[in-house]
Length: 330
Image (tube, rainbow, N blue to C red; front, side, top):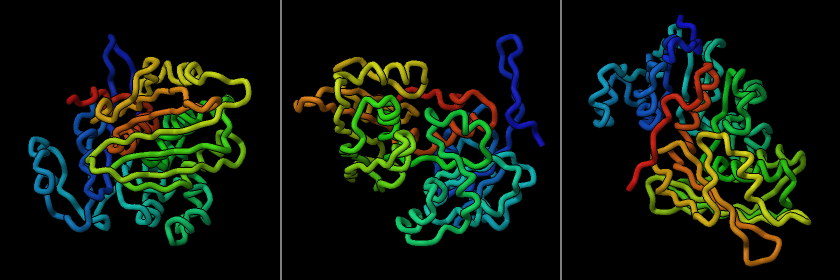
């Protein structure tokens, strides 16, 4: 088995061991596209039960140039003995038994909601079924990369965040931790082509506040194939007049989270096809309040891109490896 994650710099060149991956897929072509251009990861196994025996290019013709991708197999026929890591891209409620049965030595990133919520009773309330792997629920690390980077480094199982929570928590967590906003009266209006739920958002914000945080959250489904905008209305703490500087300090060294110049409105098409989150903060017309706008590509930073960012960290590679795509424009 490859020495996954080992690399060293020799004469300014990065030399790395090959990491063999398995992708348990619900036809997630986005993660395959990212992995196809990754210098250190190679896909060994791809599972898709209803399409077992087919090539990936027969389902997604744009992969016709990728001749090294394996034929799809059923999850029961997948062999993991020659695999270092697994990306699980199945729907919510379907991954618990599968991940529980995987070999213990594998690094796993799960893109479903199955391991995001720490409280299994809350999971049952929102998803309508009991959690079937509570021990793994306790073990799983929440993969909001810029906030939990150190915990992710040593994790075996990472629960990749949802797209709405990513776009909302990235601007709010630094402001809550620094006590610059009143976290009892947060209003969030998010727009995307996907649905969303509130418990994951409140869990992350409550962790930052060390106190229960509840939010008014309204997701709007829009006729768009990709992209997400969250507009967040907050009340500043007594004596606080500006939030911009705290966000600047929090993210000035981050590659994938960018605070725009003052006055510039983040737009979804400016991050399209990329792993970036753009944000900015504006004064509200109501004294003592502020408006934060955050945008991501929900299919990249809100899903497969952040999953790859997390897997890079887990395997010891620079976290931007394979993610250096500029946003698509127009």
